[in-house]
Length: 41
Image (cartoon, rainbow, N blue to C red):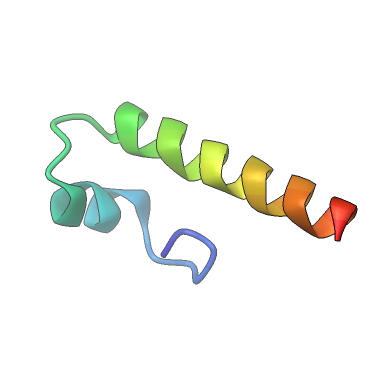
C-alpha cells in the first residue's frame, strides 16, 4: 500500500496501529526486503 502512494496514516488505520511510527517501521522493512529480493533475483 505504501508503494502505491497510500498515506501512512490511512495504512495505520487499516493495520490497527496506534502510531504512524510503527506503520512506517513496517513499511520501510518490507520495502527493504523487496529491494533485496529483486537484487538477488
